Length: 454
Image (cartoon, rainbow, N blue to C red; front, side):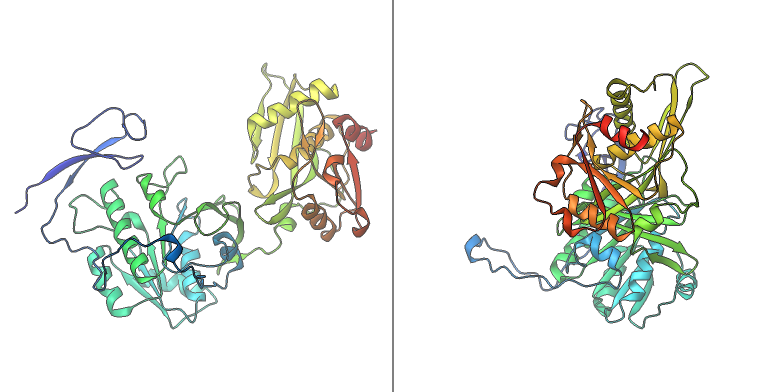
């Protein structure tokens, strides 16, 4: 019998140490080492390829570049986020909170791929539970196979018999490798199981979709090295109590990391939202104070989002500053600009800010809309619902240019807005005559305040 070996792993980066140390020498984090019992077998039964060839160095000019034929999924939101489909041999990690819809999304994709043989491996649910979820969906497939197994050696045996073209693992934290004796979900197991799946994906050109748990801080559970090993990391976000879900990419070796996909949770599964601007702008009969429409960009997709502000007198000492879906520090900066450059007394006011629809915005192009929503609530004067804005606000109160302003103007025109307020410096080389929407240009924040509020 092999001798039991105890080692310590850093939970943040996965660095191995023979003894416990307070500070990780690799990532610099404190108190992240945990003890795990492992056992190295003489004949490990993990994944080994029967057709593996010895690699030799090749001159870069002799390497023949070929365009990979991606698997186009009948889901335009996922295709957009991945950069045009699933790349053969890629390893994609999908993370999200419990109950957000990760398993539903993956099963839905497996059922939609009618011409692709898909193996759905579940370590959390029985085949009957998966069948119940599949029955609620409108798509059925003869090429989707279910396997309930957690040991990687058994999974690879079934893979050799079935020869799937796409593999889905739900979830990576439930798998165990016979190479290690530690429990499922531990740092060593997650790292080893992912390494075995990565070898399988690269050697067989079979894409693998991994579902991963997240910690209470919102990060992918397990060692940080897990995110370095995979080709793409997707975050499935949203409030479980709301119907809309956002699929965002934080790493992508085959495409942009700025793309965004939006879904709506229905009783039969997830519905793609092709025009998210309509759901991010609330429908109301009359104009109300404290709201303004801003034009933002997520990757190549322009979005119009409603920004809601509430300004009220602070009755409990220190004024409160709270922002939902927007950076709190940037909001404080914009409030300081309004007070210093615009003359508005906001130092004794509570200010609450909300991005409608549950989306988080980091684009500085919504600065002007944030400022106008705050002034509208302070002065109790509504901004027209047919007016939108796309400009950054500087510390000197100047209206700064934003990139790709033509995309924002075209989106506002498509949704029926009457006018859009932009920086004068954004219009260099832009032909106003080709747009039906009225384009108003400004250089200072006070000019916009005077135009909207007199």
